[in-house]
Image (cartoon, rainbow, N blue to C red; front, side, top):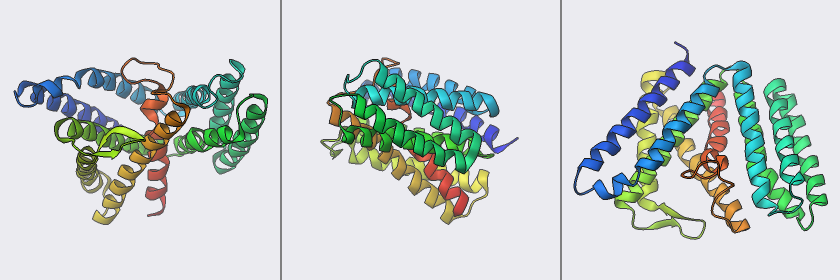
Amino acid sequence: MTETHLLAALVVVFLVVAVALVAGLSLLPATAPKARELWPALASEVVIVAVTLVFVVPGGPITALGVTALAARCGWEAAKVIYRGAGEPITPLTVATLAAMAALLALSSGVTGAAAGVVVLILGVAAVTHMSRPATQDDGAVLVLFPLLALLAFAFVAGRPDGGAVLLLAFLLVETMDSAAVLGGRLFGRRRAFPRLSPRKTVEGLLAGAVAVTAVALVLGLAVMGWSVGRTLLVAIVAATATVAGDLAASAVKRRAGVKDYPPIHPVQGGVLDVVDAWIVTAPALALVTAYV
């Protein structure tokens, strides 16, 4: 069994454990009211996991198709929010095309393609911004910084020989962090961690997420991946930090535009970018760590 298939199996196990945990908490009188509120999000999570595995595990053209479609959709969503209706409908469609082109370059041509993708994104977004009045160059800079460069890095990782394993490792740790943070925040949250940028995040929830990520990383690192304790703990720290950074970057873009969510594709989760914001940041960060540490 390859690392990709093993991690895919662990993602499924993670989901089963999450369902069992929420089911158990739903039966306890003390936690039942808040735990039952988690079921719609958990059902949505089942769909997200299924789609992720379908596109990541096979590798090759199927993964390339999935990553390209992801880049195009996220580029479209971000442009809709950042440009706030300027140049509709050409502007978001053009940005979606630029994101897809950059992703394909990074997937097919490695470092050279990624460098070409950066040029495509910068020049393309500059031109789109210039033509999309009253959009400003600041709008274009925000769009390039997040999410376009993150999507390009994500595509570059997907094109590596070990890309599937890295994407699933990042997915597993991001979902662990997010799920534990939501659950911990619902059950114990008192103090807001980022009151203005992301009001629903609590200090207690983030601590619960960090503990959960460390535990899962230790199991994966020591028992599955054969890593040292030091490397495993570094992976846990990077995953937790990158997950929060991705969430906050996406939130900052939305707050700047004065919207709650990206254009929705699902009533519970919001837009695709609301779902993958942390993943597209964490996967490249973990790729860097696992390649050089």
